[in-house]
Image (cartoon, rainbow, N blue to C red; front, side, top):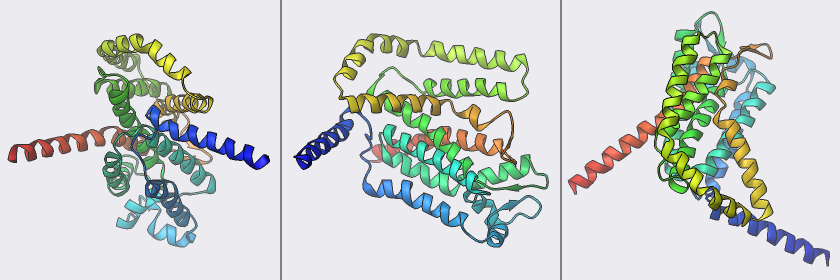
Amino acid sequence: MFNKISSQMLKHILCSIESLFSIHLFTANWKIYDWLFYFVAIPVFLFIVFELPVGLKETYFILDSSKTTIYSFFLSNYVHSSSQHFSENLYSYFAACFLIFNFEIKKRDFYAYSIFMFLILPWIISIISVSMIGLQTTYQGFSGLVSSLFGYLLYALYKHLKKYCFNNITITFLYLIVILNLFMVLGNIPSERFHYGLILIIALWLVYMQKDVINEAINKRFKILTWLRNLSIFQQVYFIILIAVTLVSVFILPSLVPQNIIHNGAVVNSLAHYAGYFFGVFMPLVLSTITNVLSHRKKIMY
């Protein structure tokens, strides 16, 4: 009797999970090797680096501005100073990747971006850090790359909304979210009224640019409510939690650029967070433009 009830419960849970695909979650049809690479291989690599002998990390991994090496310029973005530093970055990495897996509609885009993020972005972060901060200090941490994933999440969310929700949404929506993030960051850094006024004017103009999207959302509100009621309890709970976490993540830049730059005795490298975040937002747009140009030329040739 107990086995029969357990089997029915398991079947119901599995059906609920599988039906999530029908509400456009995990739309990129991720395979098991995708989950293994991003959620197992990368964390294991970071853990192995974290457990390396201190002397080895000081020689090859930690970027010292007074004696930089080609190794440390790249590898410093994959090493951590403490277990708390490591765990905080890892939790944020898991959250960002899971949200991207939910909203990404074309996994090849994320593949292409990942190559640039893992291989090119570390150099950019290190160069910016050393050239703009300098001083007799060291640099290490995965947070710049994690910040880029939250930036990429905006791009993935924009594509998702455009395909499944709002036909009238344009790239200005992405710019609006970035500007709103910058507006909130002003509270964490020394800012003049002029800065607030300028960004507010840009934000209001971008909001005006979304008027067709707003009208479309208002017209669809009853359809959305009806759609939600038709979901199972599991789906509704999952969807509500997903939206709540996504909203927090979409406006995460102020947390990446905190007012107090001293965290647990270490200096927060806000420049690395800035570099990663904007790399994550705009590099996919560059890659998409290049792909479209090459595809157009290929069509002309044939």
